Structure formats: structure tokens, C-alpha cells
Image (cartoon, rainbow, N blue to C red):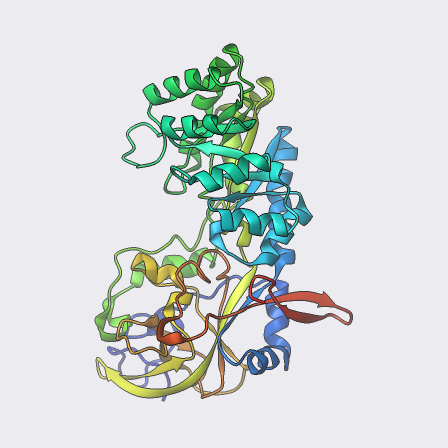
Length: 460
């Protein structure tokens, strides 16, 4: 039976626009890179990996990470400013990503001794590590200072603990944005105190200031950076180097075409979702100025780039998700399915060999919207499909919405969720039911236009 909307009259044309008015979600196809297309059209690769791994797995393509880093670096070059890119490591634990950062000349933002040592093991030098987080442990302070890392300080107390180590240490002071209720950063009064405190300790070298903002507004980031240029100049007058501003992350990425995202937003209804599930918000899956374009917009605001040049100030950015754009996918095997009816229409409920914890958007009480791809491709009738996990929890659903798959999925088929490297893969994974965590499988180019694969070093 073809896909039809619940309100469609008999014989109505089941076109995508008509389908979205009924019980089947509007399609939200992801942008697809060349490497992804090659993987999907290869008749053996995905099947061979699934057979070898014996469960769900994450595909990683680190060459794309290198490309993303270099795109940010080009913005700095074209703007004629000194800039540095530090990958926010929390976005993905894969060793191949850290190695890609070393290859492309990027640093890494770390927040634990585990992340720090993992970055060092992949060739990142201590001087290229930015250590962030609130009230960091004494062990992390000591290790970071010993390796010459740049440490972001979140409070006056933390600054005093660093000074007590009596190890030469370079620091940034984290700023609490005006009118923010964040638990991170220091107020204006605390910053003034911290600058004076740094002056009193010869082991502390104040390199500048940092901040983080929620949301994806480039203008707010530009305005805040402009304010900190003035604070750097004031700190220099007190004898501090103060040559750097870090504006953090929050660089959006463009997952899906704008028209498809707009159609989803305008037409979404609870009727699209299994058991009438509803979500209050979604990530902005279409982004008009993603990643490097957003950085360019920040630098253009009120001639921020010119002000940075004239004051010899370096701008640091800490992208996580944006450096992982189109650098990975998550693959599940279909274990079985059943047919159910809702609003008088049939749909399939699949069970796959994994958990929704491998799609961490559920962590934010939302749903990961780029449509999964059914592999292998083949003929069949379009079939409304929701996707459940292999656990005993009613709430463990990878996709609550009825996705218009091109055919009915069968046991042994694979579902590939695209562009999951940024936060989705492993931010929230757990060996619930003692199910093994999905390994990361690293793809690299091989002669003849094909790909080789190996397990990521962090898994082995």
C-alpha cells in the first residue's frame, strides 16, 4: 500500500506535498558529500563492515574534518588577522578527529585529563591545547601547566590555585556576558580583581580573555569580542601580554536544504509522530551562514577584523559541531518490524540493533531530523516508518516521526543516519542492557576510487 495522508480522498496523488498533510512526516533529506554518496553506492562496503562489527557502528571520514578546519583558517587569512582554531573535543571522542586537527594545524579545546592526554597522543602539542571548564581539578591544572597549555580561568579562586603551583602558566580569563545567568565566567568586578591578582604572580601570564554565548547569533559574538579588545588594551597597560580573545563555539551547520526545513517547520503536526509524540523545539537544521561563513560575518561586524589587526589581537574560535560537519554517519541494522495503524493509516515500526543514546538529540528532549537512508537501495513501495531501539524502554526511539522510506525495510537492511559526528554519536552513549557501544570505523581513500576502513584507535 502506498503512503497516503489520513485525510486524502481515495485515488488522491500521494505526492510528497500531499503526504506531509496527513500522517507521514515531510521528508528532511540531508546534504550529502561525495564520500557519503560513494559509500552508499558501493555494493559491498557497508555490508562488509556490518558483518565484521556485528552491531551498530559509526562511520568517520577525517579528511572532511581537515577540510572544515582549513575553511575556517581561510577566513582568518582572507581577513588578514591572526586567528587560531581549537576543536571542541567534547563534540566527538574519536582519535581520528584529533589526528586530523594535528594534520591541519589546529589546536584542541579540552576539559579533562583524559581529553588532554588523548589529544597529546594524537600529535597535538601542549602549546596548541586550550584547557576550559569550571574550577578544573588540581591534576588537570598541573598536567596542563607542565605541558605549556593555555588555561581558561573561570574564577579568582581557580587563578589562585594555579598561581600556587608556581609553574609558568598562560591563562585566559573567562568573562560572564552582561545580563547572563550562566554559572560560568567572571563579572566585571571579578575580572578587575583577577587582572590585579595576575599582576601579583610572576608565574601567571595573562594572554587575554574568553567568553561563550548560547545560540547562533554572529552579531552578539562580534559585539562581545569588540568589548574585550578594549579590556585587552587595558590589561596591556598593566604589563600583561593580553593579545588573545576567544569567542568560543556555537557555529551553526547546515544539515538539510532550506526548502525542506521550511516545509517541515510549517507543516509539522503531532499526527506525524508515533503515539502523538510532540517536541517543543528542534536544532536549526538549515543554517544560512554555517561555520566559516558565520565567522566571516562576525569579523565583518563593525570592522571587527580591522580592530583586531590594528591592536595586534589574535582571535581564537572553538568550534565543535562545525568542524565535524559531514564527517560521519551512524549505521544501524534492522532486526525486525511490525505494522501498526494510527489515524486509520498503516505504518511500520522497526527495531534496530542499537539505542537512541547514539543519537544524542534525544538528550535535549528533541529528535534528530535528517532522514536516515535505507541500504541497500532497491525497488519497493514507499512506506511510512518509525524506528525503535533494541532496549526495553518505551521511550527509546531513534525516530518517532513516520519517515517516508522508499520501500519497506527488511531484517538485515541498514539504516544510515547522516551527519552524526557532531555530538550525536557518543555524547550520551551508555552500555545499557550491557549492549556494546558502537565502534567508530574510520574510512580512508584507497586506489581505484574506493575506501579502506579500520577501527578508530580510541576503540581498539
